[in-house]
Length: 254
Image (tube, rainbow, N blue to C red):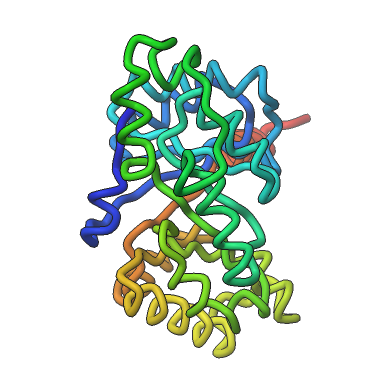
């Protein structure tokens, strides 16, 4: 697996994309496209645990890091995806410092955390590299928590201050929905929230991240201090391409 936590905390700009189709082929395409990381979506994506192992195998054959978004902040879900060899975990709907602390502890083996220990799994090369993996896991695996509600924005300083949380990641659609301004990404309340999140991350020595709804937002978002940035998704790109094809042939229908 490719480990990027040190780069993230050093402030490097790292770019990725979402993969929500449950396909190892689109994960492989994303990893080969020149991106730094690929997010495999187990919250809203079509794939399940049986597809995840193939997707992680696919991304590991590319230069990109494989990150998994789990469905909820549940220690059992962390354990399952980490044992399969994820380089990092994204946790949705983290609203308080206490919730961020639970996520950070679920990422780590005792005594720093509560992750269950198993020797024979893919992450440790089925036991061959267990000692090295065990000693490095708490320092090398990336923990990303999502800011998706107004409550989370209010508590973002406490969330960012949790030791072991590395990326404070905005989910724009959920956040604007929570704020009552769904999809209004240029609304002053949303842009103020973006600045607040970026300031909190910077003050805590963490990275600010976001999934951008459009490429036009890239430059202003980077200027705000965001460095862990996703553009688009495999599902969105396929759907857009299909619609473009249908539009091209529409004038020629009988």
